[in-house]
Image (cartoon, rainbow, N blue to C red; front, side, top):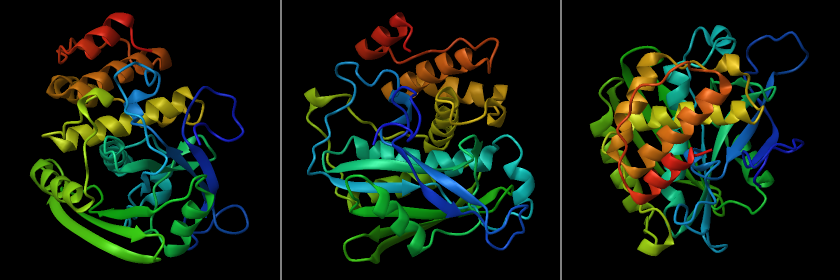
Length: 312
């Protein structure tokens, strides 16, 4: 699974799963419930386009446990229909960026092979899920994953446009068909880093995260400021999907405040520097920006090499 089914584009999302009901309680212009596709991303999203670079990504072992991280559901939005027709906003960006963060984390663990699963409407628009994932939805992912799955992590983000968000997560054991672990955390939308660091630390311990040997690829370092990193991954996914003709460019909102946030974060780590390089390159190609701020990157040999080469 390494490209969109039915498309001849270069390596892209891992696959498109069968349709899933978007909201059976809301009327639609067509008969039955409106449906969406589920697009899976199998590598760190910032790595697409540079993934063959020596020393970047570690090799994934066939025997590694397979885990899927789903887009966060965002229940309780009174203006869901209106949001679906607008460009992405911060809530949606976070809901998509969060599973990408955890999938990236587990990609750099020798024990796991992860995928991130995001919603797609008509393979051209973003989706917000108004209800938590059901066992039937989870089974759809399991049944259509080419190599099977051992675990699926689902979750919900409540609070909408308010400043207080609550994150609820569930880890499902596929073989035992039961919920294995839950997490819950509340935090201020604009001051979430401490809560997210605490969760991330506990999550890695619980999942027995284990690093690769130093010569296997980039050495993973957990972000000290997860909140801007999650948003970086969210906008990176949008740009990546748009470049693969899997998302309408009109769905992407790239305000200067977000660009500045990604730029400021770029020096905090090697992955953050690489994410800036790949996002900046895609934003230029897609015509999303006319100019970009000067950015300080972490001067590692890998970052220097890709920066000098123009990345992708």
